[in-house]
Image 1 (cartoon, helix red, strand yellow):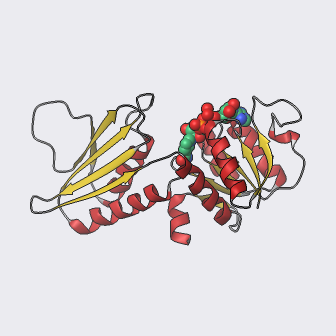
Image 2: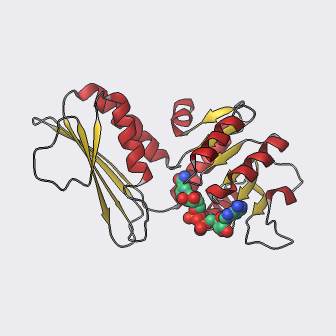
Length: 243
Ligand SMILES: NC(=O)c1ccc[n+]([C@@H]2O[C@H](COP(=O)([O-])OP(=O)(O)OC[C@H]3O[C@@H](n4cnc5c(N)ncnc54)[C@H](O)[C@@H]3O)[C@@H](O)[C@H]2O)c1
């Protein structure tokens, strides 16, 4: 597979580039706004052939990224996060013309946890649900996007669910709430733990991210799958269902 990496100069771009090549893929172009010729600072500077674009840059690249991929009829995997509503709309419009994959968390393990959490919610019946996430001390968003995504999956499976983010007031918990708690310390890559308890038994599902390379691994595997799909919008749920 011939891959163009957008955001190739960043932390994830470096990891992905190295991993792709070590697995026999061809990184045909590395693009980053900080690069100077002969490297590519803009996607449109690369006029050769490719099979897909993997984007680990910045949500502000969305318009340029989609314009390029539509023009070249290229599948695109968007791993960068923080898109505005307008950018998300543009992504969904583009998916009518080309295969577009977008997920705020490219971990296959997290996708499985989301799937399991939904199943437990449906099958375990009435129970208290608490979600605890932990990340490094430089993380800006609280709770993590992944914690919110997991909570949304549970909410989808249980009518009337509300979120209680950072519970701090006296009083009993509501039976329908999911308590969401964020810990920030050291260099923790990211853990997400969901506790389901009905008073008689407790189920705990925990995902522990050991290294950022797991996101590159997921992106690469999802990209191999994406290039075989037709135009449409895809995420990790479609990928794990399709594998
Ligand atoms: N989906 C996931 O699983 C996942 C995992 C890790 C990071 N991310 C996201 O991926 C993005 C990159 O993460 P990172 O840790 O590598 O960040 P980073 O800051 O190290 O790298 C981003 C790179 O993108 C470049 N860039 C910025 N705007 C650009 C543009 N318009 N065109 C081309 N290049 C541009 C920057 O110069 C930088 O080199 C972030 O949005 C981050 O939240 C997603």
